[in-house]
Image (cartoon, rainbow, N blue to C red; front, side):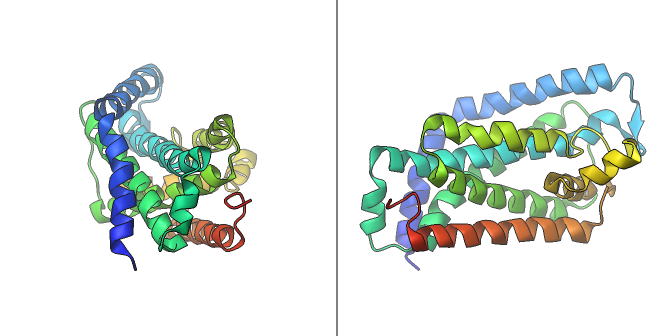
Length: 253
């Protein structure tokens, strides 16, 4: 394992993040505050509690998941697409590094950025609501796994994308709607039976449910299924990336 190469890629990607640290820090704080104004104040005034938890606190896990998923995808997809766009990807491919080291560098940096955003949002949320985390270790595990898995997914999008518009296509048209419809701001049990059944086909439901369980001990699906879902998604992304580097799809072609 070429740790020096991994470190070089990781440091280079993180340097881009720190150059816009103020923007990276202020943006999630403002967005989180607006969500609490809209959902916490407007809707929370009509919905006092959800399954014994105040509505303002109930939406925190979903809010963190929404931001973490989109940030992980965005950072990872741009990180690998830009070298493709300017042609420096060929220098990387000709260097003595394998696909795993390239993935560790880019995905590790994107996951770190998303994790930072998640922690910032968690801290911001604590200013608005009383928040108690019943299972802090499980919370960190779900948060880290979500950052890693969606950074891998973003890496795939960055390789697939043929232009800058396509980088935002899947996050905007698929991921964000799935998060909003995945129980981020409501409990699946509040839906009619038919829509509950349909919701269980949404993979984001399992991630949000497991993450919310780590906060309040409440879950729409068993915690084991949540872990299985995020583990399976991670393995699937790794398999696709392995195939991409093996065949050179969208990289050498």
